[in-house]
Amino acid sequence: MNSIKAMFKKQFIDTMKNRMILIQFIIMPLMAFIMTELVAKRNDEVPNSIFVTMFAAMFIGMAPLMTMSSAIAEDRERKSLRFLVMAGVKPYEYLCGVGGFILLICFIISVIFGLITGFDLFDMLKFILALFLGSATSIVLGATIGIMSKNQQIATAISVPVFMLFSFTPMIAQFNEKVEKIADVLYTQQINTIVNDITTSSTKPYIIIAINMVVFILLFLIAYNKKGLKG
Image (cartoon, rainbow, N blue to C red; front, side):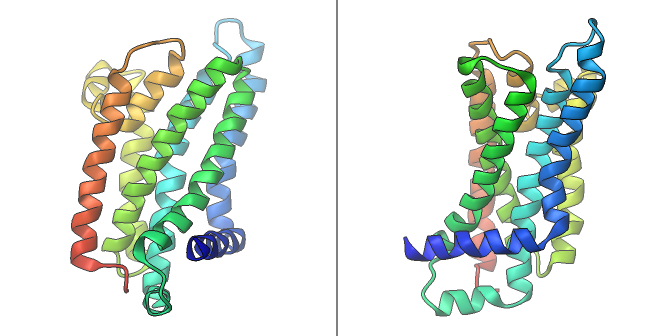
């Protein structure tokens, strides 16, 4: 537990020092707030939730994925992981500490998104749960990319097209039926489906998100067995 707390604190310090990472967590809710206030609430034909749901799905596909992959790749590049392992920090403690901090930030941002939309309590909880599951899925995918990357530059080169796929496809799918059918297998598309129809009782989106999570966990285990966390 002490090691997890130490990794949590380490990631907090690293994140506060990295302006690019901070911007990733700020820009999407800020844009959602601005577009909601200046466009949606001033146009009766535009739903108040449209920009929140759009930017929330983009946020889930970008920020946790990029942050997790960057954190692991940076520690691999600096050989920090080697020293942490030598100091007795177990791989799961490292991942729980770093991933736990990122998940906490994503939870806070999810609450902010919900407040912008003005959901009632039940819908707010459902909205936050959907984004929480999406964030956890992105973190696992980001961890896989981080382990596969020798340094931050490579991690970024891999992460950018991946997050663009998962972040922008749901947005395009809203205007293109063919893209929507293809995007149906992506967890971010299912997040978009849930938050766009928060009253739905369908379990299909959650099943697809769970399948995505299982696939990414398997990819992570393969990458971990091949690369490890020693850097």
